[in-house]
Length: 365
Image (cartoon, rainbow, N blue to C red; front, side):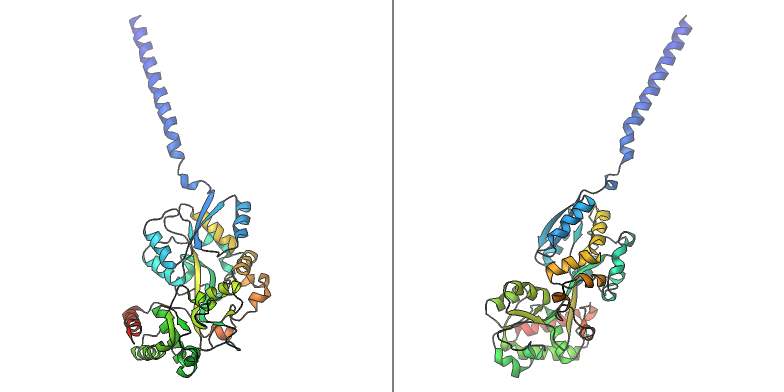
């Protein structure tokens, strides 16, 4: 009897142990069912320039994919960089300009794109398929693009001032003394002088750069200010009549003041692009790539350009872009004009030379 009792107790204990182990396994199961990152995204957080997309694009994306788009805005590339450097981890897409893309790549702030998730990347024109600031589009996709040239008050100029001579030729600039602005940017302003002189804006020749410096110093008495923040507003306020600046800023000002217009100088200038990039800290990379692929559709890309008046890098979008925009040579330059435009590139060891020259220009009387 004792043997039977003992055996029964042993069987009972063994059963309890087995039940306990099964319970532990069942309790552990949920931990194995993670990770949370594999769950479908319900929100996509974008850090963008102000008024830089048709809001209807966000709405249509939300309706098609069930992902709510939440947008914050910044006013400069430097503000964007500072926020990301400070550890802002809530953004899934950001929109830096070309030179800032290079900086963010070097600092390890961007995630590499999975091109398999962005098949519409094939819709980009050749100019934007392998840009020097992101070879092979490893990290970013061009979003909108423009140029650096001359903005002006069309009531003052009967014909468009389509030459850097209006700023750099003393005989011409003297007529507008104190009514001219230039960008407060070493590469842009030195680059404009270099283009006027017939050189590359990415030259590393000290002799060519010294020549550009002397030209800028010679021009300085005619300059109202070096300004990168409100140059278009200065024309609108009648403080100046002509200025060196970015195409998009002048066209945005022209929406409210039809006197303002923009022209690409015949000598050439800078071509630039803003880009869609995914921060390394994003937890919704698949959803971000889904959005990138979505706006690379020709009709969606055209919708954005029709809203912003910036050029679209999606060549297939041209048939859907408003003729008023597509046929404006200051927004969509001819092939001949495009050949005279250059990207601002890293000049390596010549960088301190550019900065020294710009300091000397700014310090000159």
